[in-house]
Image 1 (cartoon, helix red, strand yellow):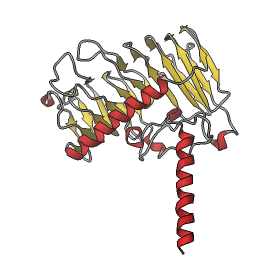
Image 2 (cartoon, one colour):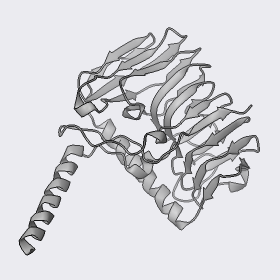
Image 3 (cartoon, rainbow, N blue to C red):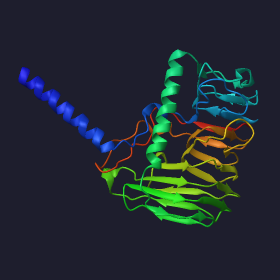
Image 4 (cartoon, helix red, strand yellow):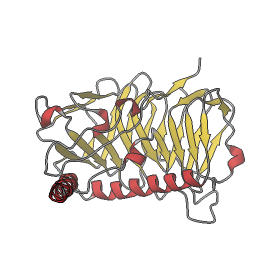
Length: 313
């Protein structure tokens, strides 16, 4: 009996060690991955109008999903913004009286010590994840892209670097084609790092084929804009991560409006404009197991349900 117990414990330890090796440290924690929208922490103390993270929810929008607001963050919303889903807000919210949405029947709001601990953990997980993605070796560089692009994956992990992206019009589409019949049936992962401004307008779409949108990460590097607010009727897919040193309400760095957005957003300074349709990723449930031992990337989402921002009718 004792021998069997020792053997079982040894096998469990070996399995855990192998799993940890597979991840290679490139993992977004499941707590962070469960959020459809997250606003990064502001300063640890003494927040003011010019030094904290900020989100503005404009009129005639509604939200149904999981949203988190970090420590000392500043949020503005009036009664034209409706909340049907779940909201987790830090108790140290800056200017809490400026957040006055219309709470709909069935919504859940939590703001307590346990919520604070989770939001701080999510913030920490995201910062670690950003550092890991920043350190990855580049697969291919595209410079400042202003025309359509089709990329076909050739391995389970691709890292694409851009100095900027400007897509304008329905023909300026970025298409990413994943592989089939590989990775034990699991999706390839594509990390897209943008070192300058990124702009989609006038119907320019992002199209994913044979690739899970949880596995397409748009990482904005430096203090630049990620702008989707003039892109009516277009589809944009993936996970946006945009944490900036620029803070306060003076300048936006992430703008989403007039676009069919399918994915998740983690930002420090964001405006969500009227006309946006926001479909979260939590419908997919927890992420699948890692397919390969070499630099596999665990990306993304726990929880159930289809989450979306939608234009109010």
